[in-house]
Each structure stands twice: as structure tokens, then as C-alpha cells.
Length: 540
Image (cartoon, rainbow, N blue to C red; front, side, top):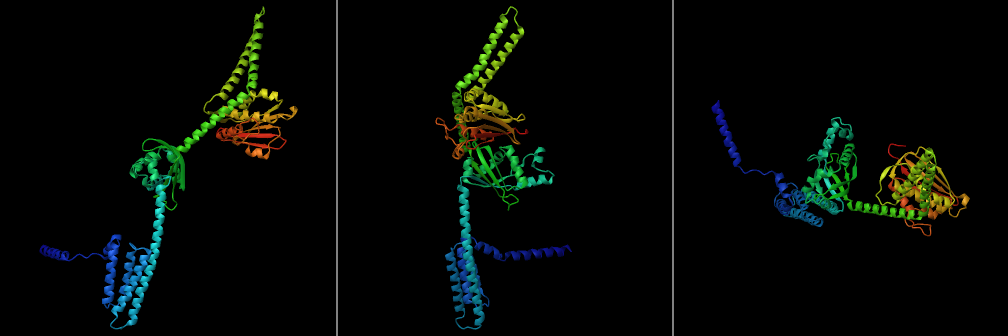
């Protein structure tokens, strides 16, 4: 049995060797794929055209061999223009007709069948040529569109990164499958953010602007920076994950990051998640460097603060007499109390109780003078804004005290209607004093030409749902429609010697505090200025 098996195996080996000695057959699809390569298409098309013509003209096969000219037209898509395709298709049709005439030159047996095959071949070549021309036109449009997109992508002034978020999406889906409710739940579990893990986010492409923005030598260098760039702001990284988690179409944020050389820059970035790519395998991240803009805004803010300081000092200069009078009152009271105390002390039997009252009066008046000086120094000091918890009622009392003499000189009747339950606000005390001071002085000056016994100034505060409201009423002549539209514009003033910056500065200060300011008026019925400051979060 073993002998038989051995002979059989030997026979099979001999048969195998004999087969391997035969020429190897190359599959047709390999030849076709080789011919379809652009650099071989032109000679391949010529060879096929020659072979088809020879077979059609010199053989008597009862098949439509000329249909194979279709291959020539299709191969011509790789190298011919639309006009060239028409020429090649027309040439193939001409070769079909010429082959038909040559093969049937010695007689016309079975002419009907031959004509039918010739017609089918011509129709196939014509239709293929027409379709090839249309395909070539579509390819040209597509190529132009792709080139236009690529030009925009590479040269636009915004940095653009093309990213693959497949692994990130898979990590988020894994958390969902594990029972994590939302991204806040994931964060509370002290899970590592998947953004910074290697290969979680892959960089597919980046334009020249992005490389230049980050001082990266190439795309590979930029890709190594990705985890560091994305995790530069931890809060934004988690918010970004929340956008991926909830399936939002985009996410936008601003942050501070470092480039390859460690230079800090402020960037505004937008991540777009295409709706037709749920796997997030193609995500576009656009980045705009806003460092220069932020620096300009900071400089503008500094200039506004400088202008506000100048305006405060100028206002205090105008109030020199009133301030001196206001200071003189507690100082005179200190002197009076001191003198009274000395007299009680010089008696044969000093009246200690009276002396104590005099001393307490001196201390109280000295504190009063000290507070006035403190407020004046704060108003005149050049210091950056400092947001603290303040009460607008207290600020109103302190500020009106500085203009009390102006009120008395102009015979203005002042009334306060202050909300007893007014919540506190966050703001810069000095800046809010400047707003109130400016509005009160404007109201006093607006009533200059009114009769002395009719000049009334009403200051009110209200506790609204989300803000504290201050209203300052006067019964002056009111505002014309033209004045009301320009009232808060820089350098606009109705005063002969005014700078036109007071109300503009007031608006800037109130807006910086997140509030709003406005004026309403009826001709002959006075003007109401009102402004709001948002309440401290958690109050009201």
C-alpha cells in the first residue's frame, strides 16, 4: 500500500513539473489594469485600434469585432481632451466603416447581417464617445473645483486642520455603553480625558496658515503638538467633549495656547462635525489668531480708563468750592467740640460727662472728614478697576455728599426714594461713583434756568429680578429728539464749555459692568436717566 502511494505521489510531482514548465497565463484583468495606467494608455489604445482593425478587415468572423473600438475611446480618457475624444471616436467610426468595406469588397453575401453588425459597432462607438466627452467635462469641473478648494484650503488667512476623530468617537461611545450618563458624570468620576491620549485624534492635513501660526516645520511636527494644544485649557477640553457627546454640529471657543517656540497667543477656534460623517473620520478645525485683536482691545480699554480718570479729575476740579465747603463742616465741628471740651475741662469742677461728649463729637467729625478725603482720593487716584461687592444705596449717599453744596447753591430740592431691600452688585466703587456724580451734576445744570422753587431732583433705586436699577429725575427743559439720539455719542455736548465725554464715559462704565444706561424725556417735563447693574449671582 505504501509503495502504491509513493508511486502516485511521484506521478503527481512529475505532472506538476510538466504543468509548471508551460508558459504562465496572465489574467486578462491584469493586462487591462496595466493598460489603463495613464502612461501606457496611449500606446495601448493604438495597439488595440490596430488589432481590432486587422481582425475586422482581414477576417470573416460573424461578430461585431469593431465594438472593441470602445476600449480605445475609454483608454483615451486618460490622455485626450474633449476635442481629442471626438476626433478619436470619429476615427474609430471611420476605421469601422473602412474595415467593413475591405472585408466585403469581393462580394456582399449576407449583407444585411454585416450591415447590422457595422451599425451596432458605429452606434456603440458613437454613444461611448458622447459619454466619454461628458465624463471628461465632469472630470474637468471636478478637478477645477478640487483645485479651487485646495487653493482656498492652503492660502486662506485662517488656519485649518483636517482631523480624524474616529478613536475619540469610539472612546465616547464606550463611556456611554458603560453607563456614564453625560460628560459631567464622566468628569465627576475622575476619568482621564481621552483627548490627550496618543492616536485619539489624528491629523490628516493642515494648511500653510496653520503651520505658520504654530511655527511648525511640517504636518508631522504639528501632529505631535495636538494633545498639548487641545488640552491647553482643561475646561474647554471638557466642553469640547460635551459637544462630541451630545452630537452637536460645531463647537467654538477662545483660549490661550503656546506655539512650537513657546510664544503665547490668543486663538478663536471652531470645530465642525459634518452630519454626513457620523464616525467623525473627517472633522475640520479652523483657528484664528486673535492675539493682535485682544492686545488692541486691552489698549483701548486702558485708553478709556485713562480718559475716565481725566474726566473724574476735571469734575473734581469743578467741585473744588463744594468739596472745600463739605470738608469745612466737619473740621469746623471738630474745632467747636474741641473748644467746648476745653471749657468744660477748665471749670473748677470739670464736667467729665460733657467732656466725653465733646471728645466723641470730635472723633465722629474727624471720621467724617476722613471719609470725604478717602472718597476724593479714590476718585482722583489712577488705579485699575477693582470689582467688589457694593451697595448702590451707599454709593449714592457718598456721592451726593460731594455735591451737596452745588445742590444748595442752585436751590435744588433733593428727594431720595431708595429701595430698602436693594441687593448688592459686583462693580468698581469708584467707577460707579463717577457715573452717579456725572448724572447728578447734569441734572443740576439742566435745571439752571428753571425757577428756584421748582427745581426738583429725585433719585430712586429699585430691585429688579436680575439687576439693581437707579433712576435720576430732573424737571429741566427735557431733551429734543435730535439730542436724545446723540446723547451718549463721544464729543457730543449741549454745553458751551463741555467736552462731550461725560455721558459717553458713563455708558462705557455701565456696559463694562454688564448693565445698560438710557435716557427718556418729554419736552418741558424734565429728563430721566436710568442705569442698571446686574445683581450678584445668587442674590435677588
